[in-house]
Length: 131
Image (cartoon, rainbow, N blue to C red; front, side, top):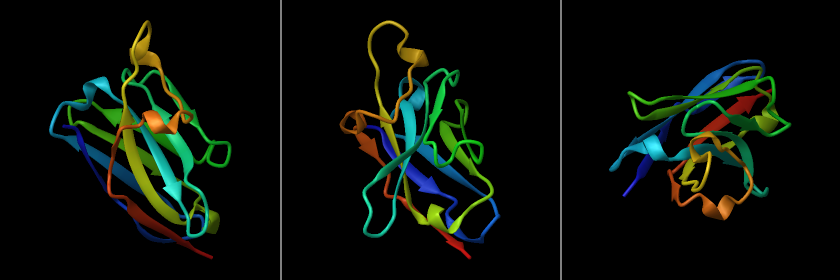
């Protein structure tokens, strides 16, 4: 069973940077697309970024485009979320989640929709951006 473990959260000032890590264990993560989601107090969960199995395709929420970068290191079985130019509205618990795609081109698919298809979730890591 795939297990995900996030790390790298913390307190940072507006304009600062953080890099979140999502380490996979249990089974190889090589067959899973991985997404980052976040949930702020009193708000619904929001998709942030997703990367395909091959790493060739990434998708981002409009609110983070140009500031966040998702990447994956297959050898380390880890997906990263580099966050720059952080804003107070980025404050949230950040979760990574994994899903499988099937069919033609499954290695190059990534999406932030169909959240229910993300079957494995980590416990989350808190990111707080002070103003």
